[in-house]
Image 1: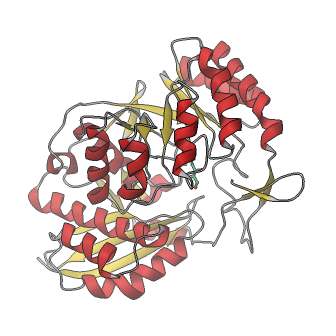
Image 2 (image 1 turned 60 degrees about the vertical axis):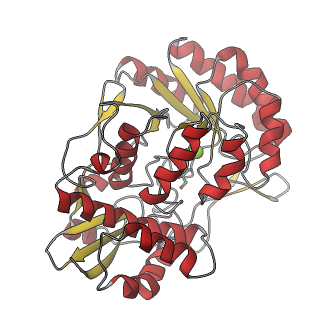
Length: 395
Ligand code: KDG
Ligand code: MG
């Protein structure tokens, strides 16, 4: 079998996405997700200009070889744009492998260890009162066993500002010192609303300094968080050690990591309990299974990143990883806008606090290119945060 065509498909069904479709001379094709919120066009350009010519005529089954070719063969290593492009291709190649062997992806990864995947969803209501009400509804009406709160609210509630053509990022105010006590108070109110048997995750979204994160986490200890996510920025690994030593609250970390080597100090020193890389950002399935194995070696569980700015293809890939890995912890189930379901079919569905999926060969998703064309891509930026003195702060 040989690759004959590589298509990049940019589309915006309420949120920007970039898909990769790799077609072969056998008629089989594979689909992958290369979405990088705020930089999709740059990823598409890299694929079109540099990677597609390297793919045409290749055997799609040589997945590891192509991964290494892109990662090491350009001499300059990694980065978000390269790794996202690599992921879109890597997923599509695994999809072709599954379809050509008639097996679902999880079977290629070692087979099923579990049939259901414990998941958590985002509490996104407008203000804090509405969010508390939504948290209760999620538990009482939808049967969620774990819910997720987050520090700060996205500019447009999940769409991250793609509503209009932007010429720069939207600015959101953020002053962490002001937020410490409201963060704690909010968590406590949600705990009172949902009761003691529901897991509560708080995504601090890299928005606090180590000392601020420690103050929050220590005060939350009696309220039993399921985990605290990304309490600090990932840039300085030693800061994570410092936070870890001063609190017993479980820590999930790593959606901004771009490689196994970036994850290594946090995992091998057990500074974290859950590794939550974004499969797109680390170069796809080929790298995710290595990170899962690395985490298993050091008793760290997985909690792969799964917000609504990754598509059902990535949610499906996460599911295949979840069912086939030993050290599965939990899966984030970002409530996807229904419009993306017009473009991408398949993917996991929600059932009684868990995610379930069928046994279709490959990843189990398909793309409707006509539907994608109905929602033209519009360049957009992720918002930024500025403090009262106007200085920039991590979003
Ligand atoms: O595009 C940014 C989102 O992927 C991120 O804000 C979502 O932190 C996130 C999460 O945990 O889902
Ligand atoms: Mg997060």
